[in-house]
Image (tube, rainbow, N blue to C red; front, side, top):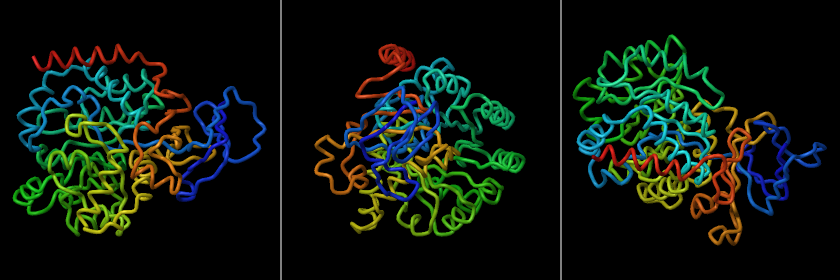
Length: 419
C-alpha cells in the first residue's frame, strides 16, 4: 500500500478542482481519496506541496520509429514517407520493434505519459515490450494495400485483447490514401461484427483530402462513415483538413479527433480547428505522433503547441482554454483509448498517476496550477510516474529497466538500418 499525502491533488472527477486530499494505492488500484484513512502504508510519499494528478495518455504514436529520429527531417509528408521512411521500415524485424519501443517507453515516462496508442507492425513484439517494461500499451493496425490483411487484423484483435492487463487492441488501418476501398469496407464489416470503434490517419494534409474527393467524390470522413467505420465511434488521427460536414459526423458518431500539433507543424500539414471542435462538443485527445516526425515524445510540448497554434490560427488570445487542453491530454486520451479505468483519480480506478514538482522555477509563483502546467510546464516537472500501481520513474531515475542496454540496442538497430 502506498500513501500520497501532504500535497495537492487534481482528480479531474470534478473538473479542474484541486484539493489537499490523500490518495492511497493498493496494488494496481486507488482505494482511498480523502482524509483520515485508517490503513497501514508500506510506503509513505510526502508530496511536500507538489501535485498528484492522472497521467498523460499519448493517443497517437508509432513508438518503434525511434530509429528514424532526426534521420529524415525537413521534408514534406509524402516524400518523407515514401522516399525515406517506408524503405527503412522494410528492414525492421520483430526483435527491432521490441527494443526500439522500449526506448520510446523511457521517454514517455519522463513526460508523465503512462499509456500509448500505438500503430505499427509486429504487434507480438510490441505487446511483449509493453509487458516486460511495465508500460500500458494500446495497439492498432497499420493495415494498408502493402502490409497486413483483414484476417491478420481480426486475429490481432482477438489475441491482444486477452493478452495481459497492460495490453489492448483496437481495429484500425493506416489511411485512405494507402488502403483500397474494398479493404476499408472489410474493416467496416469487422467493426459491425465486433461492435467496435475504428482508428486511422485522416485528413492530415490538404492534398490527401483533395485526392480522396477526386477518387470518391467525398472527404475521407464521409467515405469512412459511408463504409460503416464509425458506427461504434473511433478516432481520426490528425483531423487537420476537416470541413463542417466532417465535424457534424464526428459529433454524431462520437469520433475522437486526435490532435498532433508538433508533427503537423513540423511537416507543415496545417493546424487542426480545435477551437471549433471544442465549441461543437467533439471528443478530443492529443498524440505526439511518431519520433520520426515530431521528433520528441513530450506531452508538455504538445499541449503548449496546441494552445499557441490555436490562438495564432484564430487570431484570438482567448481561444482554446488551457484547462480544456489539459483534459484532452489526460481524460480525453484515456477515454479515446478505451482506458476508462485510468481516466481520473477515484476509488476503484487504476493507479496510473504522476507527480508534478511545483517547486521548480517555472512553476513559481503559484497562481493557476493547471494553466501553468500547459503554458510553462515541462518534463523537468515530472517527479514521479506510476503505471498500474508501480513506480517506474522517480526523481530522474528509471526503476526496473536497464537504460544503457536499451540505448545500446536502439543504436545497433539504427546503424544497421542506415547501412
